[in-house]
Length: 358
Image 1 (cartoon, rainbow, N blue to C red):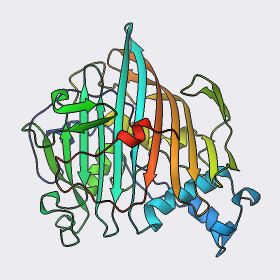
Image 2 (image 1 turned 180 degrees about the horizontal axis):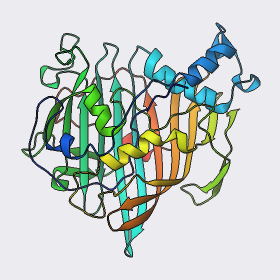
Image 3 (image 1 turned 180 degrees about the vertical axis):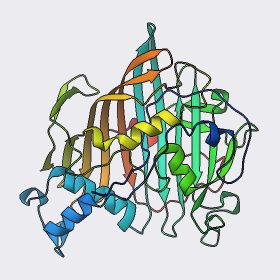
């Protein structure tokens, strides 16, 4: 089975601190010091192969997939695959995640906002901004020369060997992250922002994820776990039994309980991205230990992702001990052909996803 380590949605990790120094290709103090886990990335075609085997050349929108032999994970995995690899038109999402933890009798609530944009001309950007009471963190990645704009003529970076490369901005000064009502922004023009031109290989080695693919989880029929009953944001029990139904909006509503194989890359990202923290609570000693990963996916009849919600329960393995954490996330997809912010200082509007119900 081939595996794709799909990228970042809403990272519910506790991050902070700050370092100095800027490097060139795959260099710089951050990429050197925090490459604790050597990551890898392979394209996962498991769900795609299963889906095409069952469906052949049939018009997907005209078939009720709940009446086929496809599992809920097959359909969700195919929708992820389509979003990442098959769609060529504009697509994007914004997400909001709230992680609640308690250590040394102190309760910590951390909000994380994430965005992903891919345009029809191949330009891409992703962002993660997180802030809690005592720490803050922001990162933004472009797959082109950001200083030369987002137009079709702006060059996509390559290394001397022709491999893909990226503009990567990193900020760990909480004072330069502003969270207002229902949204957040980071000052990527601040003097202490780290900026790297980093190769795809170095990025993957550092984070165990690819900047091209925007999902935390590897989803196919092999990565689901046992049925779980968990508390939702309203405090009510909700069952995740790897099921799929057509809802009242004629959309597929898929509820998955994911196993360890679904989160192997995600855990490594959470670990490596805290390496430059100067907080012993924020800095992880090892990868987090997950108890629950429950995902609800809304998919249209033609396999467009509409929305997602996530519930995670895990222990952050920090330098001062384990920190039990519950995280609730929601993701809202958009296909309305907006542009990537032309300047690194231009903020993403997170107000809609932070206030919506999915």
